[in-house]
Image (cartoon, rainbow, N blue to C red; front, side, top):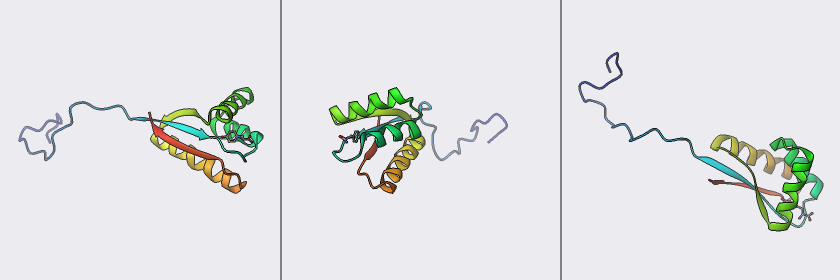
Length: 104
Ligand code: TYC
């Protein structure tokens, strides 16, 4: 390519896509179960999602009552990291807590 970054010879193999797209965002969801202690879930929300205690209690109770809740919305990489951190931590403590992600 020339200094202007164009393609004067028309030799690029692939045409540029129509428009640059924003990266997709992903919801991180926490799922209810009958065995994970409420305090553990609150601790997870504080530790990995930076929630204040009151906010963590509120989300935990939403999950407990409704079956699941969105904990946050992140880029793919961050969402994946959060899910892995929560799942590993729950497993270390032998709780069946489940955390998943879903494209927004
Ligand atoms: N239902 C659990 C209990 O009664 C508490 C709980 C809340 C578990 C949220 C998981 O994601 C969860 N001990």
